Image (cartoon, rainbow, N blue to C red):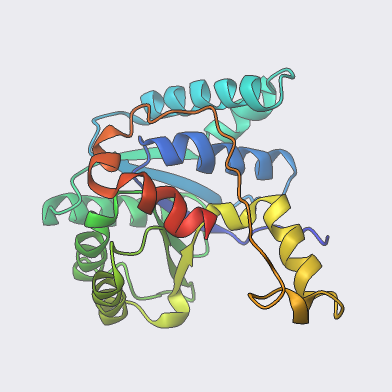
Length: 254
């Protein structure tokens, strides 16, 4: 696999104090950093309702990375790499439906663009509950952060679930397209990045023998086992609204 360095950009992570950011996103970014796959102009600006300073955010991320390293790999944590990576992390406190908060966010984005060689590329990653996708997109547009400027690009990443049914999914999609262009929007499910899942896709569509017969006419049944030891944890509020079926079965497993 060809490894390419990610382009310079300012990555704004909405929901930066939450479970998804701490358990999945930040460890992945740190891994890319250690592999020298992040540009020197790559900067992360965390954004969430939890009040924190830059240093408090870095401490929280560092603790999460150490815990992830111990659980997933069991080897020593790279403190030297962490000290360098942590200097790329910043934090902004604010609400998801408050114009004043987004005006402050826009000012912080300008300041970081001036301080670092981000090339005015902006990536907005919504690691938040789905019910705030629409207000975040609207306020980004209202404060002028949806349009690319100064030669840079602007992109939006949203994590599943995309709505709670077909009607709400269409509504969300229509709203996003009212403030972003289609080529700016990335809809993802991080399970598709798992090596086993990617291997299955390659095995099926890369083999002329198997691809024509992997359908209901030849396959008796499919058994999917999601073997995870992690419980709901701090995600009770999210599960109360979405439920395990929508969180796991509708998207991850299907």
